[in-house]
Image (spheres, rainbow, N blue to C red):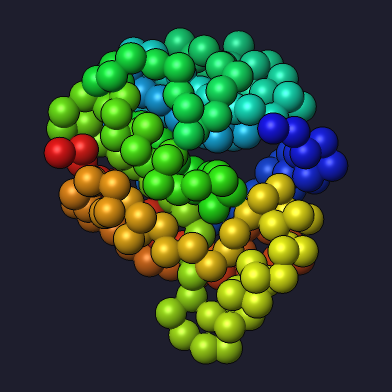
Amino acid sequence: MSNPRFARLYARMSERESAEQVQLRRELLAGLGGRVLEVGAGNGRNFGFYPPEVAELVAVEPEPYLRALATEEAAAGAVAITVVDAVAQALPFDDDSFDAAVACLVLCSVPDQRDALRELRRVLAPGGELRFLEHVHADRQPLRALLAGAQGSGLWPLLAGGCHPARDTLRAIENAGFAVERVRRLDFSPGRPLPAIPHIIGSARAA
């Protein structure tokens, strides 16, 4: 799974993150501990925000360019970090092997959300926590029609690394057997020139 052009664009954009996005990363990861899995870790932008209570972080990233950047970032991390070449829908880990998992701006681009979330639930220990920060479909017009059109055209997913902007990710999380404990909905832009679009941030528990 490689998209070198988008990978380089993403890496450049992430170097100019807004204060709001940095704060969202802090909020997403606050209070985590134990053995944690992050899927779609990209270039490792989250690594510096994991609290010291995290005993081990395993970061999955299938894109070679981003994975190389994440490996470099891991060396400077305050917690023990291992970067792994794998995809969310086929995680090479035992059942019940993580205390928590993190999905940050990745469930829009996995080929099948059901497969990815099923795998996350499989590798989480009973009662394990899923933290998520994802952009989702709009609940109002005309933005809803705009996002649906972008996804349906096939052009936006091709240009944006497989991103599908009209997914109902919260419902997918619930349908995968997670009990959502908290969720906050917000609009923000991940970077210029992209417009502000709906996002959700929260946590859920594996049954």
